[in-house]
Length: 341
Ligand code: SF4
Image (cartoon, rainbow, N blue to C red; front, top):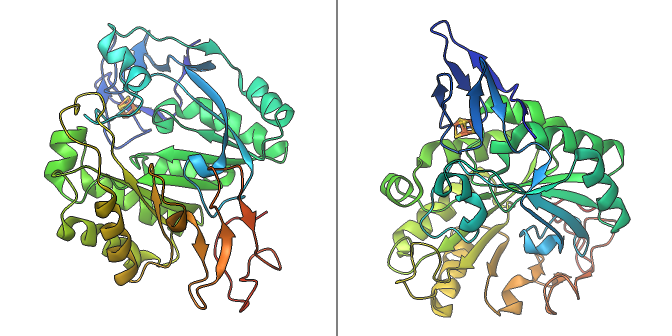
């Protein structure tokens, strides 16, 4: 189903600017945006994947990954085809790049915002995640769903590459409770050559959404020989520590995917090194992901070092939340930041 993509501006020359993401596509009649799912038709920018979900799952919230957000709860998760990035290591390229690789075809199953909220409630979820592909490219669909979700007492999470415009964030902020934002690397060449994007707008989104009071966690997929030098890892950690040392950082293992099948998986030692760098520069919560390392998936109190949230079982199944008074270390009472209820 297609709807008018109202996050857009009509220009005097007849073109339309899409205001959803920082690719800032300026489109003439019949043209598609970089994401492949927003197109000008009959003088209007239209979103082609409204209520058309290409992937739907009920997941543990820890899988997003969100570790300081309703721990141990289930999250109703969906996404569409299309993406504003073209990461050569994409783990969901079969949907994210689908329109670009299939002559602009869009596919999916019908899932209206109302039905998404109904299913989330039926499955006992506490939140809805807009994920698998970049949520801002199907912005109007996420907005309508998130609004209904809030009315039903559910929270909302974007799992995103962080390319939202300020306008997009301002618009969705009243309904958006959490974001996991990728910091895919810390060089412009990495973003340009590997992802088809730029670094600065991503950092800006993190700063802006954080200032708006949205709970943010970040993820960095460490790719051997590409973005895993001490210098690059430290730069990411320092950026984040300067912004907020209590913002969780997930360092995650790469597995050969899509156009990077010739690169080996991330060694365990690289993740341990990144974990240590993150802690050394002052981040209170660093987590290791995509690899079996339960000790580094656990939340430790930054003051006394005791376990505050235990995730040593299979992900999402054995989360034990020890926090007292909803947000504090059970041993020394230090507040642990997050969205706990
Ligand atoms: S959401 Fe799509 S159409 Fe809009 S600016 Fe981004 S890439 Fe372009």
